[in-house]
Image (cartoon, rainbow, N blue to C red):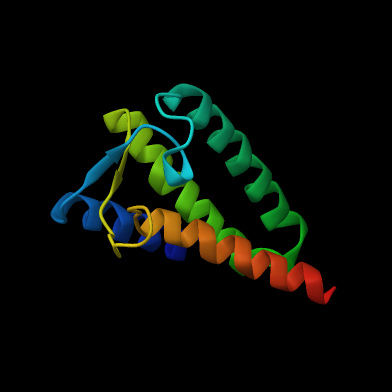
Length: 117
């Protein structure tokens, strides 16, 4: 688990370093611009919750691995740069990054697994 999380975080950080980036001081879709500190606090709370449930419920570990990786990836940016670096631009959608994708994948997988229960 920790190796996969580390690999995903490294992929996120390397991709942000080498690819053209747009800075985002807010959350998804640019909401809450310039709320970096509250968003970082919220992210760290979410990270603790995800880690808690990772150890509590084996059936939802895969989605939580993606969520933990995404949270750490974007939180690293917030701590080091004061903003999140986005670089994936598909034209019709707001610019995003790998960590955002990991969060989306984690949420979708979590919804599917919980729906099946």
